Amino acid sequence: MSWLRTELWTAEVVYTGFGTPMLRGALAVQGGFVVGQGSLEELRARFPQAEVVHKGRALFPPPVNAHTHLDLSLLPRYQGPFSGFIPHVVAHRERRGLEGVRRGLEELQAAGTGAFGDIVFKDEVMDFLLGESPLPGVAFYEVFAPDPQDAEAVFARVRAKVEAWRKREGRVRVGLSPHAPYSVSPPLLKRLAQYAREEGLPLMVHAAESLEEVAFLREGTGPLAEVHRRFSRTPFTPPGRTPVRHLHTLGVLGPTTLLVHGVHVDEEEVKLLAETGTKVVLCPRSNHNLQVGEAPLALYARHGVEFALGTDSRASSPDLDVRREALFLWDKVDPRLLVRALTRGGYRALGLPTPRITRGAPASLVHSL
Ligand SMILES: [Zn+2]
Image (cartoon, rainbow, N blue to C red; front, top):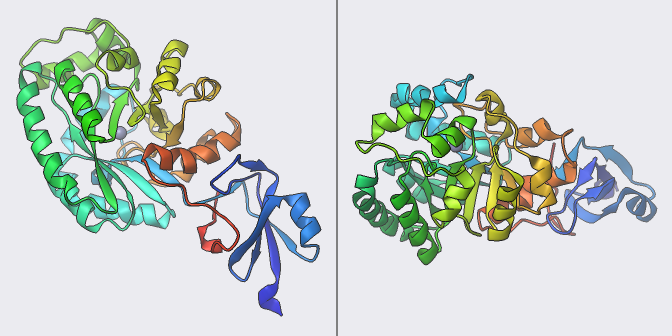
């Protein structure tokens, strides 16, 4: 009976969504369903007639793209120094919006994405995602307000919107995204973090992405000083601290905070992230395109920081297939960490349960790389 034919799917790393990802693991698949999982040797002994099928580098539950800007999906891709990126986005701002979001969601689905964390810049995008997203995730409402004089007014406006949106939460939940420590004033960062804590709202903040950001926060110098002048009437007073320390001082770090990029951090800051339970979302291909450097993966792993992967936007990344972020790093770190980051790390960062590949699970739940 051919439908009972068993295949043993194997890969360099096999992860069922729980426990530790296995090296030389396998899944037994029969009639479109998973009927066993374990080491390849173990399954060979249990299913001696089964055909062994090599599925590439990894097998795992649906991956999570923990950091997207779907509304930027129609922008041309920028490649060049970090300081040119914000001007690039501003120059193409008329191409931001719902059409890009729709295109981006299609791309996420085509890549088999199980959940996503999106930065939402326009109200109409939040309305759309809350009402119509086919995928679960968190839509983080972006706040960009560097002038401390605006802090109270911006906070009041953001809170009113978030309260209304939260009544419509379903498959997609609402989060807050103070854009970055250089583009949101300290009093507003503090206020938003406090509000998020009180309300149990997840926070996502871009931080420690570039050396320009570090120089600006420490000394008030570099190209970000120009960006700040453009958007703030009040002159900038540098806090004199690195991004992660600055955020910690303002109460922004914590278990429901996702720090995106985390490229320029020292060991003490990595410990701070671990101690506060802050999650990190790495976007290695975006970092490569914006020439900002590479995140210290080994340091994050050594201190047990939970990390996820994200593509960032189509404006700085070639596509929205988060599996390619793992591929990009494949030879740089223990690949089991990457497979975990793609799945469990991502679901945990977004506060969602990780789908499990157990006996009886449909084979369609199994994704590969
Ligand atoms: Zn981003």
